[in-house]
Length: 412
Image (cartoon, rainbow, N blue to C red):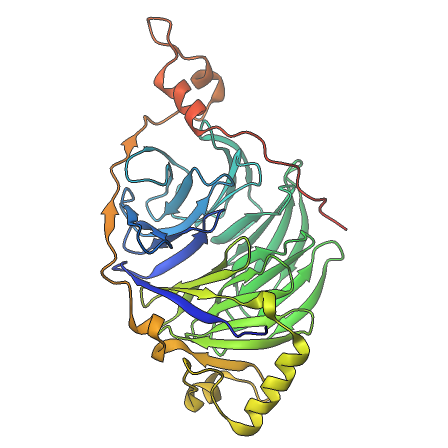
């Protein structure tokens, strides 16, 4: 049965703005990074506790889960990358990745490699097990805001303050595509699940979707009234989620090429958005330090029923649900004249009012592993005087992964 998105949970716990969020692979946890120098793992099981990881000494800008969900990586203003087990007591490792703040971190589909993007104008690829540097991608001429592996791990997309989107070939290191935006720099990038398209959140209030193979613009959306900070594709590939400085969240129907929902609830800029891997939920976070978790209900979406509902709302100017409150002033300030998206304000809903602000958050007590050298040859052959493997060699085993199943081909 066709249903609108609905707020499911409302968490507060960070003392600074939320900068990024990611669902765990199985969807039961959300990791959020924050300007308060911490990462919090929120467990969506009501009876469970949350875990705060506070090993960074400065704001944390990026967070990522390994494909198996047994490791979390975070990066921030202190120039370090932390790799740690997502539990109260576990093992953690760290290394200095760049000469300036690290803005983004991402695991490849196998979990063997990581990408880091930095204000030092470079993107670097690392081997996870030994925290070993592999290669750099250095054609950017300004701060790099984000770098993401394609779904099959063969391509990398980067966005930079030089107003560029660049696509690199992982094997050759060659930049194979460059897209530029004259109006403003891109702030975030997301790969389409099929691996042949990317979406870019732009500082000029726009969202663009590019066909990587054909090197052309596919879709342009002007649905926000302020810079767009983050975008995320639904796993089906049919919908796009966006968050903006205008305090709203948008859901776009990519097949119809139009916005279908405008969601409110945040009281300040929305910096981070993301879907769970099954698409059943999505989450949003921002400068108001709130984490909102939503039931997407997009698996029930029917374009014809939506059109009828939207038309009825335009003619009657009524709410979309008993839990929502339609704000005419907000609609006027954020909507284009031809925007017929359904607007839902969840601030009056029970889920919003019952904020989980008293949710117990436990501080982690991770055992820090010694810093490993960037040269694999030295660390892999090290042994103790008694002939036993050294601690650095054990680190590689603890952080290593088994290969995942092959990813689909990049182009269809």
